[in-house]
Image (tube, rainbow, N blue to C red; front, side, top):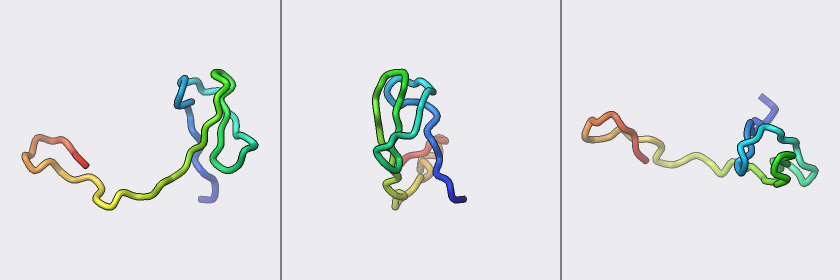
Length: 61
């Protein structure tokens, strides 16, 4: 798997009209709201998800 995942929606307006930006890796431009943003992967959580000890069916971090 060599390609990175692309965002489906603008995080500001929710529109789908996104294009890769010339600003570099992970940068995107929204043609609808005229905003530019960058996506990056920060890392994995050390604890992950744990089951609810009370057994109520929820998950918590």
